Image (cartoon, rainbow, N blue to C red):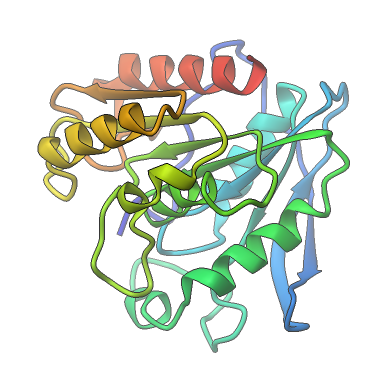
Length: 245
């Protein structure tokens, strides 16, 4: 599990407050109605963000995060992964996401992401993912879906699981810049895997920046973790600079 059900994203460097959006559904390629949350900025900057949540799927942390992106001028949408299941809408501390995560398929998740992307009016669209969503964000750079760039917060670059993409094996197909933000204390993503990902991206001539915060745990990007306040502020800065470049 990544963030606690009551977690909130770190404050924006600008001090702006998140905007409020709307619960919607988007139609995927197979006709499934995928739950999503859409936030329209008051002062659009012409760019959009598809937020890819962690293994719990769509819950308040990511709605809040989408609102934060909108406060900075980005049209934002966040989607759920479990539209084809009986996963409960309310996902508290007792919710076990793994049966639902293991039932997902990479190609179908990418189709759902593309359906969410199609809802945005922005001309340049980026993917920003966390944990499970971070791994998917990295893989989207190779999916030929027209993303202008991808950001992965503590997304695992390598996996042998069929439900999780292995981006480290896809670098020769990547066609957009990659930003990766990792915690040095995250035992689920060993440093040597990040280093190998960096080498593969370099060898494939993919523009990229992989940054590791020493000692930071998995899911350090959380307002309730004051000891990682500086890392959170830096991660926000790197992400916003990347999206605006």
